[in-house]
Image 1 (cartoon, helix red, strand yellow):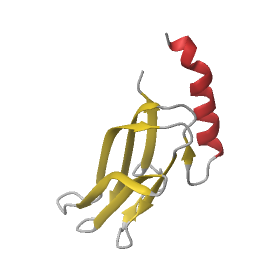
Image 2 (cartoon, rainbow, N blue to C red; image 1 turned 90 degrees about the vertical axis):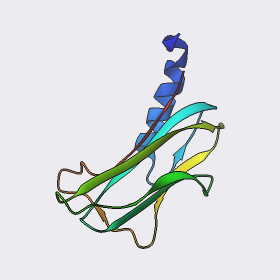
Image 3 (cartoon, helix red, strand yellow; image 1 turned 180 degrees about the vertical axis):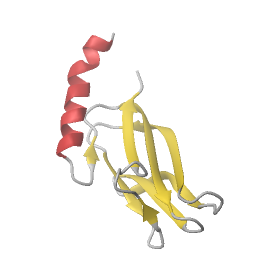
Amino acid sequence: MLYKWLPVLKQLVKIMLMSTDKVTVSAAGNYYVYVGGGAQPNTALGLTVERNNVGVFGVYRTATNWNGVDTLGSGAVVYLNDGDRLKVSADPNTAGYSGNDLRHTSFFGFLVI
């Protein structure tokens, strides 16, 4: 069954690699979408995944202070249509963090088949 989705997956990868701040969906279906980010101790993190400039879900929390940087994330299964555009926006008061290794910030999605 996977073989029939390979052209779609290849197109999705191509779109995601060429994108700067938005991802355009090329096949309708259910997608698992995840967003996460790092936050300094006692600072707020607010990230929203938007579909066509409308918020779908996000991460909103203040980091703890017990061990330094906190990594906060959330994911959801979302039905997306062909041509939908996804992007991540940060709330104005977000104090995101990512070290030199860039391991504290992530955004990904995949088609659930």
